[in-house]
Image (cartoon, rainbow, N blue to C red; front, side):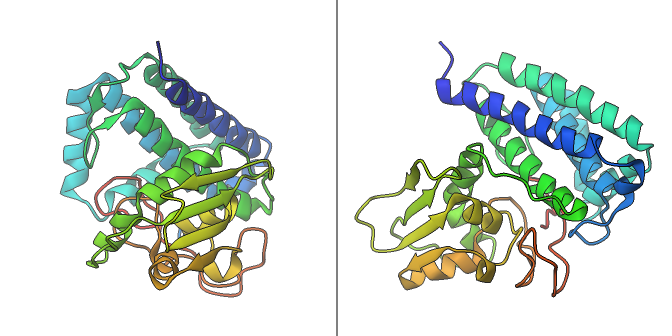
Length: 288
């Protein structure tokens, strides 16, 4: 019998992609050239990047040799292959790019649902199970979707799908230290995040932990994906280690990006430097 949590993330990934699809499909063709908070990336670059990464995920699930060739090409240019993939896709007509992204998304959804739940599939980092891959794709779709919404001046309503993003952000705590060459705290933290509809609190870590993070789940997800500066978020840290973590938290793999400056929370007019460099989850040379 399929794992209910795995089935949920597959369904949630489909819904996240559909929501973003409706946002861009309802935009004018000229809007695809609008700049997003990621320097040098337009809305077209954002969709092209999602399409490129969805295609890589599909290859991982269905054609290990093909994925190996793709990964080998990427490793030849670890600092430029993400931008190169986005540039290639962004050069297409918006209708063509949208159609290709839709086709790949549907195929990826089918492949994820059909994958053996215990099998591990190759990726740029450690191999992943299908449910973990779906979680990563959802996180990236949501985060890049936020960049697109910002460019269009649209305020998106947060959903319960953010629980997948929040979980990755919590689980990536030690990685955030490691990528900066810092030792991670020995003890676990307690994280308590209020669900977007206010009906529940998502909890992680031991209830009695001295180091704690509390606040809205949306704010934690914006922080962990570097879509907002902590100064613009309603997150509270108890304890010096928890406080430091909020300065470095990241839910994605790769070198730490600069993040957005204070005053650049989605829905606000920016008054600082642009956001972090875009990249690809789990891929070499990623920056966000």
